[in-house]
Image 1 (cartoon, rainbow, N blue to C red):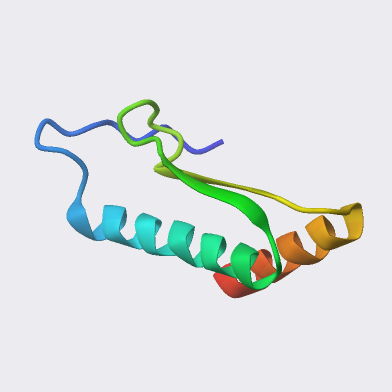
Image 2 (cartoon, rainbow, N blue to C red):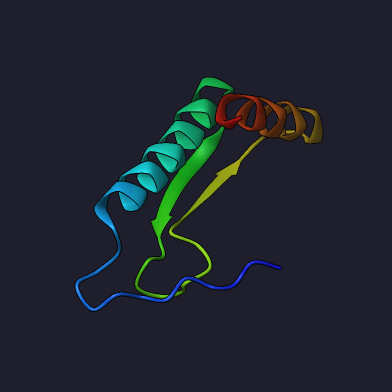
Amino acid sequence: MPEPRAAQSNGQPQQRVARSRQLALAAGRTAEENRGRNIVVLDLRKLTCIFDYFVIATGTSRRQLHAMSEEIDHKLE
């Protein structure tokens, strides 16, 4: 299991934060393109060292949710 990132006194490295934000927004856009609803990108940087952002989206069926998650996985590879 990877070790948690230690918070730095002046915040987190800008390049990593920018990349994390870019990935979270790409996941949100992909969810939207796949008819996801109630899409929220939460900034968790000040709450935990495990995640920078967390993306939540709802769907209308199990099949849609599966397709949405597969497409997000594909886009973020």
